[in-house]
Length: 194
Length: 341
Image (cartoon, rainbow over all chains, first blue to last red; front, top):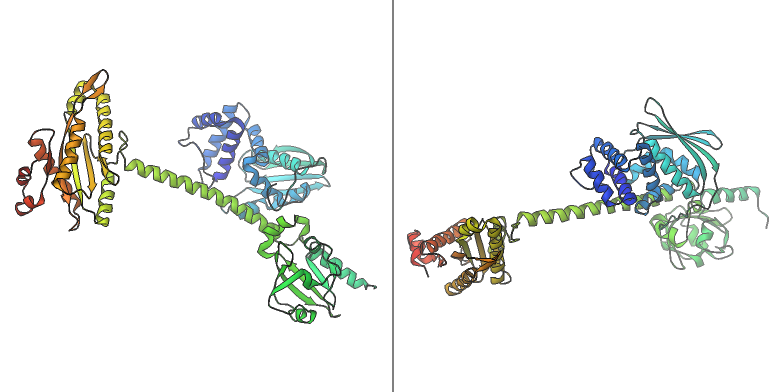
């Protein structure tokens, strides 16, 4: 697994719960190092190990942790560049949703060895969408729910999201757009800063 | 002036496809501007193109006839007004003597979006500017992450090297550092004395007062040695109770002896420990590299060892300087004993 993914989990735990909690998670997971490097690649099993340790340490369900990580990745100052990179794609929330089809390509353009699972956006009606993940690590859809909720806030859109997983490992996030301009949203400038 | 339907349609098409274009009349005056052009140059209509924008390459007179001759050529231009943004452009002549000039930011796009507060709506939907801005930002972030990793690795490497070349108990350089020191002195061609010190009665301290007392003594020795040397000298712990000094520029026998005897005297001072006093001494043997031949490191260490053994044999708390003029003709350690001070 790419170090960026492991770092996302690590930064989420540290920034949300503090260094002491992260240290406890590291001990629980039995790591022989204290922090992940974003530019290195790690064994896939390690990611599951650390995720399980986070859930156990916080006493929360794995799915809840994943959703919180997704939300953290868009909203926290430490990972502000990610939110900016996602905002480049679309001028409004619907435009943004459509760029998700190309998300793996956009990600590869930024970090060429970062391979994301297949993402496809299906339109089921004027304000009804389905985001279908294939070949994604189990529960990735929960992280997507967290990210989409945060991005909708960012654009000032009001959405309803629901997660379903099928037997064959395909995860689907249903998106119902209730109001595209519900709130002000956060500013975004191409030049950077916000 | 009335406009043909096809002209209006043409402008609509250009506004959408090339929002940074400008249409000039035969007099070189702007008669239509794309929406993004108007963000760069406020109220451009009716103004002369050459008053707003300079054609830098290829060089051309600022009149319309000269400008029209640049049709189809890649133009390098810049705004006259600050921030003097540089632009790329291409000119298409119109049948009535006018022209359409389409512009693009090229690599100045990063500054331009900041200077003119441009948004995605200011670029044609097919323009790659947004992707370029995305790439610049993404690569900068990735580069920063790589740089941080490199810095951490570099820091870890230096720490590991320091650890490898130093003794954990005393913080002094260790035997592994000796090669580097020899190499440095040899390259500089500086003659130096090599002094090998071996503690006397250290085993008794360890046996009677315990290893904690032994460690305390070793740290005390390190303090004495470090205080006795000058800047540029080196003091190393090369074994359990063995130490070495490298003294560049110190080659006169009386000066070497002076250093050795001063150190031995300091080491013989009682060392307070746990309501009692510990007593040690040291024997020292020295050899000198005069810089005149290539430095044979092992041989130099060996000769200093011979002098040390001679000092031990002659009684504790003594110093012996190995003198090559005595040794080289006969090549035996026995002569070194004769050099005892």
